[in-house]
Image: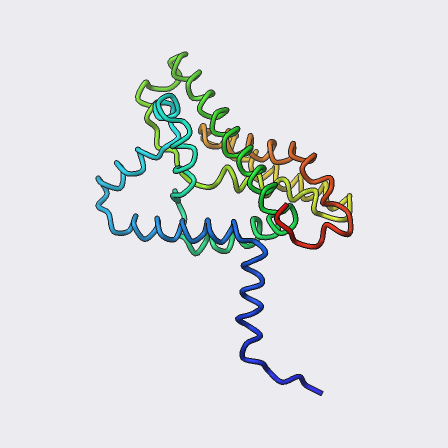
Length: 218
């Protein structure tokens, strides 16, 4: 017997899906808003707006807290629909598994740690004249460091250990390969973020039991 279609079933399923990863969808909503704003601004004004929110060396010295937060609310490359798909692939399962607070912790560690490490490398390059002085104002906004960290920490969600190693190797290869082709400080940041995500294993230990399959926000 074929079950009859209930018009309310799909909205309820969508609501349940969103409510089990509230942080991800709030973030996507904010990114959608800033993406709309970006398309309304002229190139000169947009560059000024993004520079004010960039986690470059200059801004990190003046107002680190502000730029570390606001830089993650603007997209740099790729449209919002692409990030909607990517967030659902990585952030949604990570938040449902870890809970919102631990998911935020992993993202914070990856985003902040990779930012300071990559900008530190850039500062060293400037100090040794391997990069121009103007690089202190390099534009650096986006969500990719947090994404790399979350993609990496999902290694510990893979139930079968051999497949877990394959997944981890794939993540590391994805972020290591660019280092050998036109190396940039952001490439270093992406690899650092992935390694920091792998280092977040202690945050996942209590989530690897059968009970951990139940989403929560602890």
